[in-house]
Length: 169
Image 1: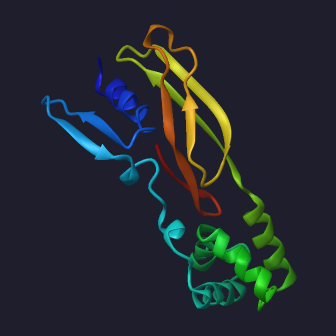
Image 2: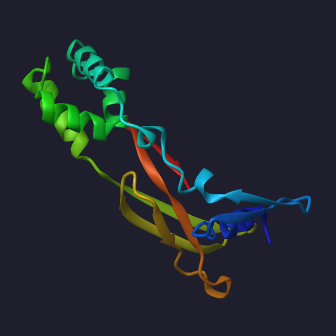
């Protein structure tokens, strides 16, 4: 069995409190799922200070709408806190164009993901392609696995900027 298949097989077990990771040297490591697929991302551990959101809103208001901005990336990464700040404070220093763009980007809450399990010879042993909500843990079953049985890939996707995603599976 290839190392890639072993990794996917261990990922499929992540519905339990621990998983066994079989190392190539024969060692078996026990890893808590709370440190893996179910672990919260940094923005899910605590509420972001309102002042930090206000600072990013102000910085982005001073940036050309088409230009890359760390402040804008931060507003999208901390989307829940940004939405809460806007609900409490309105647009603040944002002009109509900046607010419209921010609202449009915050409304993008789904992502298309696809996985293929390929053996050492390039044959596809399983696949999936679905649209999933951002920030929600997913259990994605591979289709076409035949004798391999049920294989699922567990994890989540997080938005970290207007054109960038982070995924942990």
